[in-house]
Picture 1 (cartoon, rainbow, N blue to C red):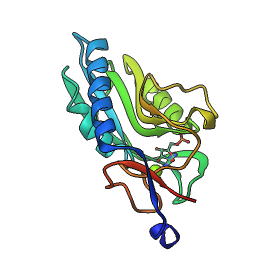
Picture 2: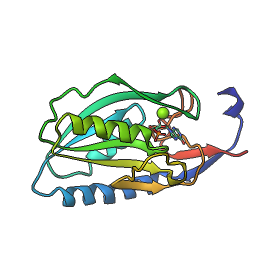
Picture 3: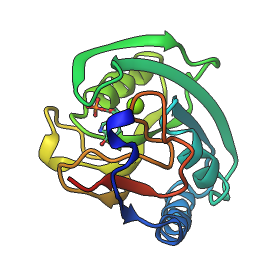
Picture 4: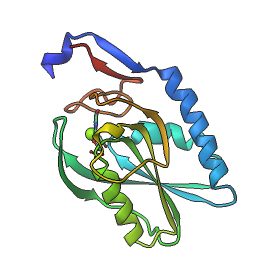
Length: 177
Ligand code: IMP
Ligand code: MG
């Protein structure tokens, strides 16, 4: 972490932009599931801030549960193997599940979790991510709802980490070379 401390930050997505985009995506989700209820499955730790803001812009009945997977060490590249660290705490059989993550990168995490949810007998499974890096995809996953598409750059803030840090920063940024 020390190596980046003195580098200048580039704000990629500001707090204001995040806020207004989440309001729109929350409204879209509420409209699409009108008359139904959803189970928001938030993937820890990366999506905790995004989930907190997103669910407050959803107006239909919403249950919220958390699951922890790991595929990343502390670095920037996926190991490609997803492990369940903490499983879904509820019976999701027959529910409309919306899996929420901070970013869909290779798509390996999202594909794994969506398959897991299907196996548990959900009525429907869709996914929503704050960020999408389509250039990095190694799976067929395309987020059903996505706030921002970004190029292939490693970003942090608003839940996204580097090492153990930067999740608490309220905007998405990277460092100048
Ligand atoms: P995937 O399985 O490759 O799609 O990766 C999903 C996970 O990788 C996310 O939940 C993030 O924790 C992490 N990740 C991918 N790209 C970034 C990034 O640019 N910054 C921080 N974390 C990232
Ligand atoms: Mg992470």
